[in-house]
Length: 264
Image (cartoon, rainbow, N blue to C red):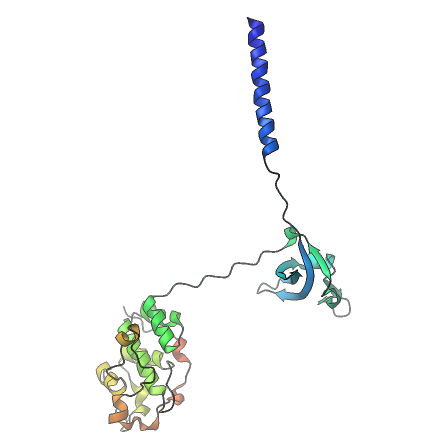
């Protein structure tokens, strides 16, 4: 009886071992990554913000273009760059361009993933597209400075009206100053735009002078806005004093966000 148990035990052990060996044999072997091969079409030295220099190699393999970023040491070993002893500077070995190369993929330095753009409010995106400004700037007016999109749209429209001419539409370069004026209740920045020199004392007066009733957020969102319309009541009532383009007030200020004028 004991002999039978012993024989059965041995048989079971062999069966288990055989099954494990079979599974191991059936498992696919791990494949090493294939080397990067082809004809070198370009070799470039690049230095990042941390003052680290790498070598970017472009390879053409039967029409398939690949790039590989290598350390200087790896590139030197491959004969792609060398050290100029006279100047103590790295130089590209131009004669290697057009020659075949085989690069070990484990030596390739992965490029850092590009930073993803921060999402912006859909209304900011619409205004940005229509007025040709950065959507993040409009988001700043809204989230950082606390202005509603309706007021922001009015400021953008007024900036276009003030900087436009009979032949050309204006831009958003005065939007920041307009919003600052609304927040501070000081409209002296725009005194030159009034023929009699009278400066508005409130937002309603300023808006009436430089904003057409059709210039609002709704027409932009609905896609019904007329990009060529720069007519304002100021042009009718004040003649705009011949200062439609407003260049003396400095363009390019639309990137500011009215810091220091945040709403509580």
